[in-house]
Amino acid sequence: MNLTYIIGTIGAFLVMVFGMIFDKNGAGFSEMINFTKIGNFWDPSSILIVVGCTIFVLVSSFPPSALKDIPKHFKIMMNTKKNDPMSAIDQLVELAQVARKNGLLALEEKGNQQEDPFFKQCIMLIVDNNDADQAKEIMMNDIEQSCARHDDAAGMYDKASAIAPAFGMVGTLVGLINMLAAMDVSSGGGDLGPSMATALITTLYGCVLAHMIFGPIANQLRKRDEEETLCKLIIVEGIMSIQSGANPKFLREKLLTFMSQKQRDGEGGGGKKKEE
Image (tube, rainbow, N blue to C red):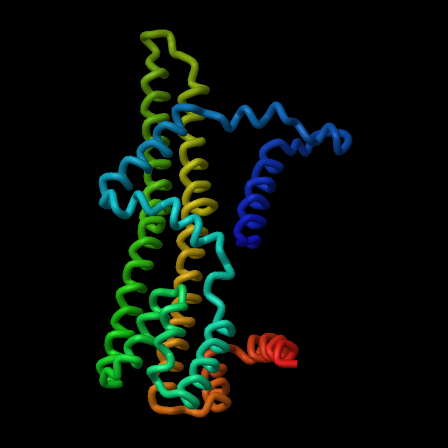
């Protein structure tokens, strides 16, 4: 589970709410917390303008196939353990051992057992004795296309984070227009409070949606994409090395260079414990 996203998002909302209800004029701590003030930040008109318009602009900007993947995006964002570089390295070293002992054709059974479609495809490309350059071209093209799809998914939330503040400004203009209309002296004036509240709160809602909801989602999706791309690059390099007959021990050292020294030290210690 992605604890940093959960803690960060909930923490940001809690701090914002605390700022809304805090009353610096209170005598004691209990008097400084004024829950009645939270009602000042509730405005259905502002929600309708910002949230409603943002959603419908997204609907008009992206095809149904992209919109229906939104639940899938949240599942990907919350899963931080799907792409494990050390697990991929361990599997590749095992494949290298099998290939050196029994030949590349012996990897077919391992390939059929592989749950990751990309990993399975890479194994089968060398089992079928394809040309090394052509096989690598297929693998790298798969990675490029996958990155492009992931960038499109993150781009949808970038679009939303740009739209929300814009409609916050639209709501501000709507509130100001209503406020100015209510200031008609000939009609005896009017209650300017609700119009002014709509004018200001829509900007608040737009900023909250952009920077506390949509922005972090886009960043998290790109982080998952980086993790997946790293694992795929490790797989490609490992598979090509296996095809060329690389020594398993040399292969492990070679693939570890894709990771930071801290990752190598931490994961390497765990690997030694397993081997013992």
